[in-house]
Image (tube, rainbow over all chains, first blue to last red; front, side):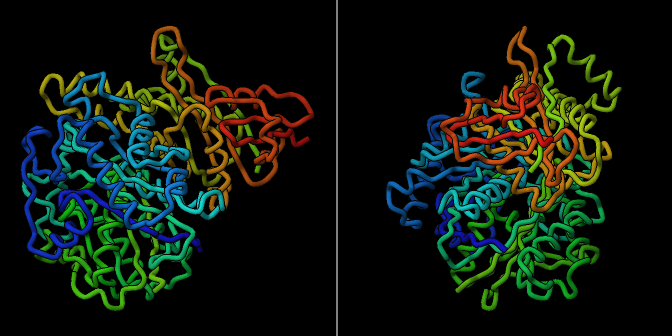
Length: 362
Length: 215
């Protein structure tokens, strides 16, 4: 059991430039993503509604805005803030800079991570981490080690994924994208819709409303681009997270699914959930509203989910309309009364699987 | 914890393809060069260490698959065509972990870190934490050659909880001021070359680690 807490979060996403606007928008009617000419125009894409002179300046402007929001919520003394370590999870880092700036704009991943950290005004040690779509949770895992080991009282985790053509082209080449919309768990689901986000999570030893009870990782090497159909490794990671948190499966009030609308990946996760839970707890997916924000998806979905729960709502799963009998999952939003224990799933390319156990402390 | 089989691999760019073919035949032909480089060193370390059982894999790089990324951008996007799946996949250095797992090593978890050269102590620190859940952690520092003449680098070692013949006892040292400065490029080779009875004390940033021959 860890003694680390989520002290503060901030988010820029397609739902809005800040977390408050995102939660407000998520409580309203679903909005379809636009086609994005910057990513080739052929696919819908969830873009952050922030403009900039060029890719790099836009990324920096988004970082400054998210940093301001986080500092306001975190309320940490300036000297302590400046000394924070920063762990940046991303799958593409600064690849998008090439789209407009060519080779000179394409930085090595560590340099981009360090640039983002400076944008947040923190000067502690910087680490970049890539485990594809679970990168943000891998960053959280490293932060937990720093906090639990007593090296730092607080640690800054960033999940960063900014718009770029290469990622969209790559997913399109793998035939993983939907031409219309992300429909997590829905009978008509036909692929992912990608998106961008910059999310910040301040992990702290200081008690806060949500404790990180456990984080478990697994490796599903069935294929480099998708999980095994039986979902066995996903089930194993969820089981390990519950064991780490000392929960029985009946204690779980809500599962935040990885589900992004991919036919096979959703099915594998559903198999894992059904193996562990009977009846299946309430479930939610956020990729119909944020898009699949890849390396940012852990911190981004964590920030959005906890902010929604803080306002008393389990968000609706945008894109889910009709239950798929074979999946046996029917995400549902509504009143968050009684939601105290949340299992939070992510998985990605390269077989990386993670499950996070979150417990409300007050 | 204990460090086994420190393995320093340097491969001239001109010899690289032949070395990969010699070790893996056609098995890795669709993997990117960075993943091939990871596997070449990781497999050499595992061969030297022996043993079996579940394995966590952790490696660091400053530049990662930057060359594969540039190649993918050059070959595909610059022509206005969608990136080929295998070209795109080669831009993801983390996939080396899955390829290692597919070679029959039971891998429990993996991560690719991007670190500056003097931040290598993050690797033994994180490995020590992972050892709470796994008996063995394979750790590497991997860098592709950026220009002609410079060798590709793929250095690896195996950390484990229990002592073993030829292993180094490895622990964090409070005496950073007495430690010799080391970088991602040379800390594993220096451990591999250490023959004295006294512990080898190496520092990266403000963090020092000692490596003592365990008899």
